Length: 511
Image (tube, rainbow, N blue to C red):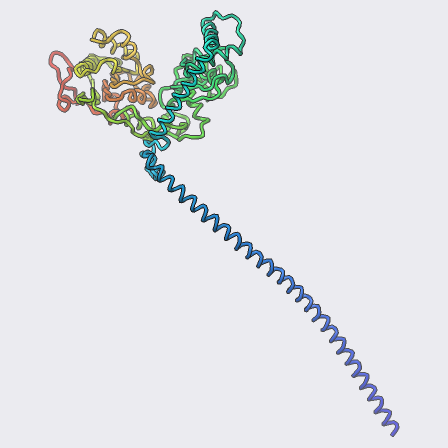
């Protein structure tokens, strides 16, 4: 019995031990789970706190965005009101500025170039009035300082005559300033700059305005530019190049001696070309045949042409400017406002099988020139309204012989009005007679190697251009093909007159 009780008691103890162990394990597991769950709750609380902070920040950002939106809306409303007010002012201004259409930027290229949106009658009148008032101010200053002004001018006169003796540079500067006050623009040549302004140093002249800069070498212009604070160079790099008498071989030797690039070769560039290179505003034009580049940069091109009527305008525009120019010439009756009956521009073909191959001038050329001069005389076109030009001196000599002895042709007019194309650059006339004759093949090739010579010749004529020469020899050449296409050949039936090709019976020119 005791044994059974003892065994039962031990079993109870074992059971109790097992239960206690199980309870301990359960308590430990509960503690672990509690610790884990507590950590999870702690993390969740931290996440909740972070979320609440972010939510608060988001709410603040929304409130700030709404404030900024309201501010932007108010600014937009203010800007819209200002823009509407500006448009109203612009519409009001446009009623007094007929040359400034509101849609000017949408106009085509031709209409934009012909417009003057920066100028109107009131503006130009005010500017002229300001200029006249400035002259009044100068006049008052000179009158109030007459003695000192006279003394400065006397110093300048003595300097120019070389009788002044030693004069300080400051007095020389004041003497020139006195002259510029009275005469704002002084005209001179590059060859005279060094002597005329010898005592004036760098930047001593306010402005230098260079005309026909395409005919001047950079080296010729350097003295004037050195003395100027500002410079404006006006010229055309697609007209005749500068005439340089120094042999090309000597030019190249000097370049090598002073280690200067070939781009500064005097006979290969001009003051205008150099000015164009540093001009940020401009355009590219097709380069003449044989040039190193396909295009040439032209700075600030003045595109509207207001001198020549057609066909002279079209000839120049096609051969030299790639169609970039804009026709701005107003056609006028010619030779006077009441009559428009002078022979239109024509090519008088002087094809002569009997002409020697190397003869630049023939009897038919002389008869054609005489015929044109007679026509001009009958219509009252005097030599002062005429220029006779040719690419070669031999033709100029023959043309002068033809004009010699005719009424109104004085020796001075012959020298001035009958000259080579090079001498005619920068000049103009109502009527131009371009004498080409026949000439040797090499001479014709030289004349046609660039568009420059023909461009100058055609653009000298304002109302009429007459060409005398063998059309079959010149028309196939570069550039002159454009001249032949634009200038009809003279026809005695259509043009209602006959010019004598041979004695004794006159006949019309061959087709």
